[in-house]
Amino acid sequence: MSETITEESVKNSIIEVLKTIFDPEIPVNIYDLGLIYEVNIFPDFGVEIVMTLTSPSCPAAGILPGEVEQKAKSVSGVKDVTLELVFEPSWNQEMMSEEAKLELGFL
Image (cartoon, rainbow, N blue to C red; front, side):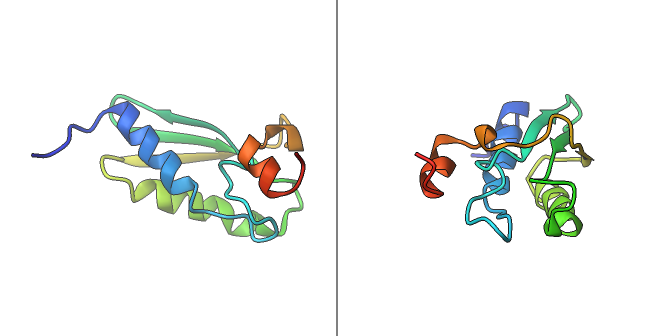
C-alpha cells in the first residue's frame, strides 16, 4: 500500500534529509544549527527553502546551498526547489536547537 504524499509529509521528509547535511567546520547538522529559516511546501509540491550561513564569509558558502537544493530535490513528491540564501536576520547561537547546543557544549 503506497503512502499518500501530503505537503506535511514532504516537509517532514525534507527536514529529515537536511539533518544529514553538516557544516564542515561544526559537527552539527545545518537544521539543528539553525541555518534553515524556512521550508515552505506549495500545493503543487514546489519547495522554497530560506537559509543562511554562519557568516557571509563562511567557507562552505560554495558548497552548502547546492547540497541543500540537491538533497531537497531528491525527496519523493518534490517537483522543484527554490533556495534563497539570506543574511538577515543574522545567524547567532540562539538559533541552534537544544541538541546542537548540548553537542557543542553550550548547555
